[in-house]
Length: 266
Image (cartoon, rainbow, N blue to C red):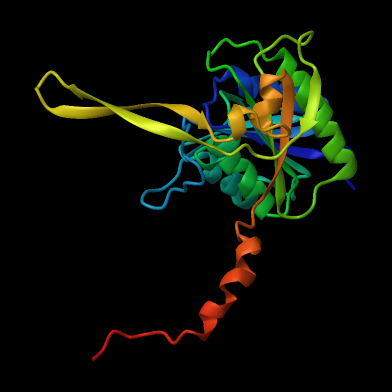
């Protein structure tokens, strides 16, 4: 029997990211840590995996209670490598982050941070993704560490249902301004993309992705959603189900099963 929990930590911001270092620091309070990071920032990779070239993996730190690996793959590759090639036993917890920037609402669909957390949940491991609403490399992660400490303790004590992970977002406020934690639903919103057309020195056109978040909740409110909680200076905790089936629609379209499938032949 293990004396201390085994905790896997990963991220999508690269090995030098302050957010990952902050999460490792908190995780070590609870157990032995194996961390595996991408070589470079890979925000927006979602659940991408590497299939067209081999992956590289290097052990860069090995000390009692902590091993850190560097991978050439995506965040999800990192989790897969850990499960299949690094860890000698199943981890008790998978932690991803702390991401530099929000992963609330529909951002979860693009997030490499949450892709890694969902990969943990798919493999039947309690998993949590953490994000701070600050994109600066030298952001203050004190409030995020406070939230992470609380949520990690709860999950280790109480567990999570199989196939469910947590999406935790923390507002960019001080520990004194942070009002607490709210259990939330995902806000109904989306990113409205805009592309700036530019030219390179050779006169060739290229496009730079920009955009803004549009909150579809009534009057931009949405009480009880993650966006609402963050606006009120609460950390939001959204349970995420890896089963994407829209069960509410299944019975409504069940009659389609009676429709003969046409093969297109005359």
